[in-house]
Image 1: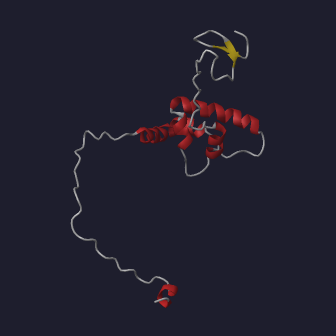
Image 2: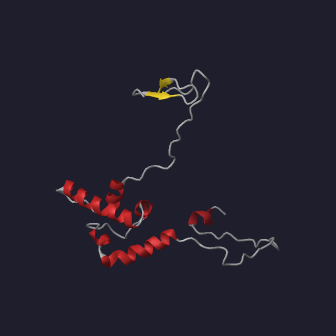
Length: 147
């Protein structure tokens, strides 16, 4: 098949790539675009790790390797939402066995889904009685003077 052409499945005619309908009447299906934005790994690194002032290329190479290892162990979506109380110096802390338990706990909490079949569902029914009126108290001097 020539480059830049596509073949109609019904009449086997060669058409341009951007052609949406063939002369025989066949309509090519439109390709769907992903609604979800792609996850940028460099943005994840910038959020989790403090960037050094020099030797950035080697830093990003090393950190990207560790991020890919963490994405294999857990998932990219998990790494995208994971946060810590401060920026780390390196992702080597997260790869180390000491923080593996902490990340495992966070990953289990990320993937947790409640099994509603185990617990009974209680119907609450309709509301009974009137609402209690709430008195608005003057909280500022302006509200007091506007009375």
